[in-house]
Structure formats: C-alpha cells, structure tokens
Amino acid sequence: MRRLLVAGNWKMHGTRQSVDSLLEGLNQQDWPDNVDLMVAPPALYIQHCLERLAGSPLYVGGQSCAYQAEPGALTGEISAAQLRDVGCEFVLVGHSERRSLFGETDEVVRKKFAAALACGLRPVLCVGETLEQRDAGQTAEVVGTQLKVILDAFGVGGLAQGVVAYEPVWAIGTGLTAEPDQAQDVHAMIRARLAMLDDEQAQLVQIVYGGSVKADNAEALFAMPDIDGGLVGGASLNADEFGAIARAAGRV
Ligand code: PEP
Image (cartoon, rainbow, N blue to C red):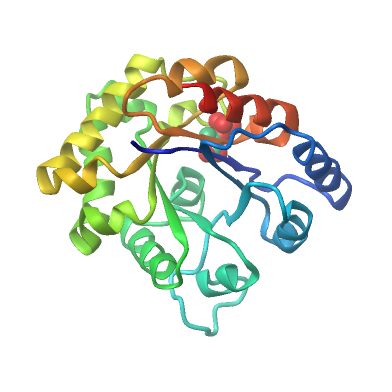
C-alpha cells in the first residue's frame, strides 16, 4: 500500500514575517499520521523552517538544486549535498517553471535527479504537458519523454526512490484543476509505462498530482487509485488550507 504525500511548493513567496506566521499556523495543524508531508520554502528560509518545524511531521525540501552534486564554481546555485547537509529530505526537479522560464532541458533535469539521489535526497520529478500539447493529443508522448530520460538512466527502481509529480502546465497557478478522472487517466498511463518495465517497483512509485489543488478539490483527486497525494503551490501558503489538504489525504 502506497503512502500519500502532500507537498507544498512556496515558490518565491515570503518574508521573514510572513514565513514566521505561516510556520506558526503549520505548527497548529492537526496532521494525519498516515501521510508523508513536506514543504519547499525559498532556499533562504530553509534553515529557519527546519528549526521551527523540528518536532512536527513536516519534512523540508528544496525547490531546485544544482545539476552537479560536488562543490564547484556555480555562482548562485545550491547543491543537493548542501540541501541534505542542512537537513532537507526532498528536492523538486523539473518543475514546469524551471523548464519554461530557466531553460531546464530533460538532460539538466536528469543530472539534477542524479545529484539528488547521490546525496540521499528524494527527488520529486515534475512532468506535465502544456494546453497546446494536450489539445494536440500529445499528453502521453510529452509526459512519456520526460519520464523516459529518467527511466533510461535510473530504471523504475531509481524513480521509486523519488516521487513523480504529474503537473499539467495549464493547471498550475491558473485555478484550473484537472478533473479527477482526467488526472487519474494520466497517472494510470504513467504507472502502466513503469509497469511495462518493472511491475513490482511500479506499484511502489508515489505519483502525486499538482495543479490548483485546494481543500475543496483535494479529496476527490486523492481518492483516485493512482493519485498518491498532491504537490500544492498557492494553497500551501495558507496553513489552514494546507492542513485541510493534508487531512483530506489522510481520509482516503
Ligand atoms: C506548483 O507550483 O507546483 C503548483 C501546482 O501550483 P498551484 O497549486 O498554485 O497550481
């Protein structure tokens, strides 16, 4: 039986003051004990979050990492080893904003995935199609290619050490959510692809959904057989809303 994961991506939001009040709100939540929980703050606040969330069930993760694990001349970057060193458990790789705004190719995403695994972090591999690609019937092909790069390098067993986040680009930050059936179809397609390579490992891979997940749509999404939780952007900036999403995951 797979555990569900509810992860919050704070993106480039927060000040010392707002992060503190968010942490205070998070520390007041009644967290389910049958769900994995994680927040990914902006890197500057990671250490503070780790300190303030110590004793809570929330893991802390990075939103990205450098493509090389070893120290080096990469001004402005933060390595997977450094994230691990301060106490992170997870790191997002290949978020659509990184792919579209920072030119991250599948090859860069593969290197970041490798760096994360090498440092003992659980990489959350984000995959998903744009609206144009969906309308052109290319969802399976686009998601399949994003996955293949990782599968060719690490196999299903390597992928199972991380998490897959299916995030249709058209649903991220737009308020548009994939219908539970629509998301389930893609999650099932992903799992079927993995199962063709290694059925046993495929059943272990957590595949979470991301794209305008909120307290009022979370339970219907998480009730789908191949949706193993959510990657939550905007709604994770509100502690009560994020807590409610986590509790919805705990109920399914
Ligand atoms: C995200 O940033 O990964 C995301 C899913 O954002 P939102 O929940 O705001 O759509």
